[in-house]
Image (cartoon, rainbow, N blue to C red; front, side, top):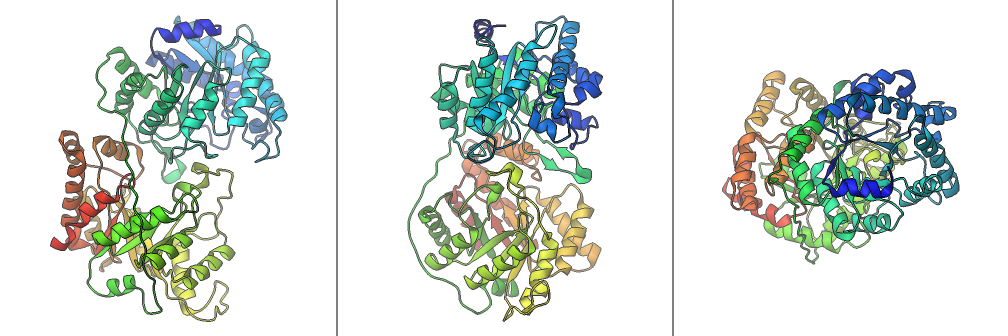
Length: 623
């Protein structure tokens, strides 16, 4: 197939691609630490079975199982000398399946990132990168008896790496179609910080035939981003292949993706409405997802989803700090005052004005504390200590500092604790933290020396006694108040009960929970703890997250691990004439139902809409 033929094929209507390969192989028993690409020569029948499943489901374009078949990635398993063999085997097995299907199926050669950083961020030169890509792509194009129809360069985060891959392809063939796709993090930027409009502008200027987005989050995020790409680059075909939501690590090491085939089917129609030319799936998607999308594309109708409109407002102001007496939070926990804390993210740059303006509004709305997140979603932001210090100094509202253990060794943890205490930040929320692989710098060290339960014990039983981890004096005892995390509606209730009991015995002063939408299940969990251990749990601040609209409710339910929204509440959001108001009303009802069982509430704004938080806060004087 040449570039003109590819363009003509797309002009006939949207082309349905296949779904994930690596996660499906893993689900079929291939260990995550082995080369998925080597399966082409070790177990070709398994690869063929997956290809056949996608074709039977309705895919019109499938990709070779060669995503990581370059010298650098294969070198991680000692297979760097088998680049040509593995890539040609990937083409051969796919071609056999296509021939046996008697269908007009396109075969794309999958080319993923090299797994190394290019200069100046790494030590691999653009020339070395192009050479590595050339080695792989040449094998895909020249495989006997027939190479691939096109090349898809996917899951990229570095534009320079894409440029090297495109240059390598064009040096081999001037007329083979090329699709280039980048992946985005939860804050709608690539891992190297490129926004979608910059990506679209840069990619559309390359000598390629389609640009798009794959992997990333789930269908909702990719729909939002691909619409930006379509607007910025209206004259080039676009592709979209989202993950099946954000992955959730299960017991036993399995990784689960929450978005269902029906959810994908609805978004397939939305992608068509957004002008997407090639539609598929990435991590977590299966033949069932593709089959549902095939049905949706073959029976066109109105999608129930459309592009979200997020409006962020900002204000300005200032105020005063904390002293040496017990923190206000400690006093509230010792008394019976209702505790109301709202989560805020530090700024992405050096300017704190927006953070302070939001903090001022929340204080005036009735918030008694503010939770300051530390590198949420592993994104690079201002130090949470600095943000917390500025809020306490300028706004006069006491903060709860999120303190992740991930990425910190014992030396750094203890130094950070001393620094926070010296700045007057003495309320801590100890968590594991988000893995760096999902953030701005996936290559950053992600190791840790201590888990949250161990850190709670270190703070309460050593630092607060004037000792460090080694038992040496730190001049004077600290006075930290320490919180821990909890899910009130866990999948494994017994495991969560035991973990909470362990944190309580290590000295946790309070608990912050994930957003609660099923109040009956939450109350049942609290009662189960009291029944099991014959004592109440530590003071609970229940998570409250006002729903923004039906799309937001479905996104949280389908794509965010650990959040389950009952059908009744999702149906209310679907039927609501004013969904924002309905979301606030649901949040108020949840708070009213939980109030007899908890000490307060931990409110998490949707899309930075602190005005909605203010609407929720209005109800608390009445309950």
